[in-house]
Amino acid sequence: MDKSLAYAIFREADLSEQEVNEVSNHLTKVNCKKGELVIQQGELVSCKYYIHSGCLRSFFIDEQGKEHTLQFAIKGWWISDYPGYFQSKPAIMNIECIQDSILIKMTKTSRDHLFSNFPKLESFFRLKFENTIASFQKRTIASLSYTAKEKYIQFVNTYAEIEQNVKNYHIASYLGITKESLSRIRRDIAQKDA
Amino acid sequence: MDKSLAYAIFREADLSEQEVNEVSNHLTKVNCKKGELVIQQGELVSCKYYIHSGCLRSFFIDEQGKEHTLQFAIKGWWISDYPGYFQSKPAIMNIECIQDSILIKMTKTSRDHLFSNFPKLESFFRLKFENTIASFQKRTIASLSYTAKEKYIQFVNTYAEIEQNVKNYHIASYLGITKESLSRIRRDIAQKDA
DNA sequence: CCGAAAAGTTGACCTATGATAATAAATGGA
DNA sequence: TCCATTTATTATCATAGGTCAACTTTTCGG
Image (cartoon, rainbow over all chains, first blue to last red; front, top):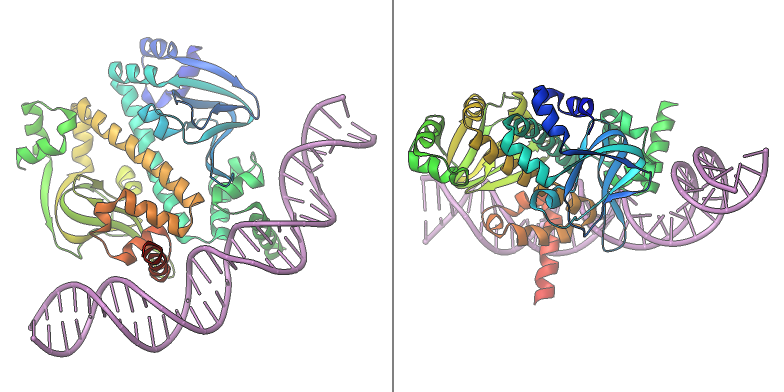
């Protein structure tokens, strides 16, 4: 894959030219159309994806057939079904392209190979993981203590860029409420502002 | 600190005797009484703790003064305020000893030092982080799609050992419901079983 | 072993959010 | 540009879980 892309993705890892070359060989560029699923519930998870452009979401479908959005990912983020990816198991969620996107794919095999050869890369991802964990703790706090309205306001403030790229019913399913409830919340907010 | 303890904590890291010695110098054993707070909301977070014995929980207090439990930790687990720990910032939560415990404390400084000298340790924690992230994704799924009753049943099944060590109102606050609701759920389950 | 404090339960009532259904508005392909 | 489809809104009614308050049971220090 194009070296300049690899360089951009791992900028903070401060790789040498030699290292960038090697890493590039393990990455694949993937064009993905709106609506495509790059990971499907039940299928073995073998990759994670870096979003070069576009927008994706991970969601799962419960027994009643309802969708629940776990995560959105935009430019610069990584996304995968982590329980499946880390343990090479079937996905418990789907990952859907919600806008035409350009993705950089990294297989688990490549990753393991790179980790053992380039400690810098392992550090790079360890740092990413730390941020992910901190975010999850914050989201858990929000989910335990905020009302639906507060969650929505926080979401909009924290992820303004994402908010502009996704449907309201996706946001609702991320917040754990129905699209109708979100609609009421939005009306309340609009009224108060007026 | 006692080398055999360090050896046990990092068993999977497969450290050499030399490495165990070095690591030991960076760990401190702490005895902690039931009720003590090892981390307090608002104070700078400088350590994470390994639980050698006993039980702890992390929780935060919202604006209405209500407690929300984020995590429990028993023998073999690590606990900290991660947003604070990773970024050396003030804690957004409290960490309380809910049983007399023996903890092994690792400062951020020690950790950073050890990571740069022992890649094995960085791998060790990277793996832990992966498991943590996978667990968080699963918890998020539960919190988005399960009823209170289902969450409780899953909790008991997943964390039987913890369930025996903590108060019901702690479990309620972990599940995001009131102690009264949990009480009713438990009655329902008991009735069905009878 | 006792009594106070902590933990758990129960009942009556309330409220935020869900369910359903109808409608309105926005979007996008021919 | 138009129409079909998708998305968003609104209204009505239902319900899971919250609130408050009284009461019971358990725990634990003296």
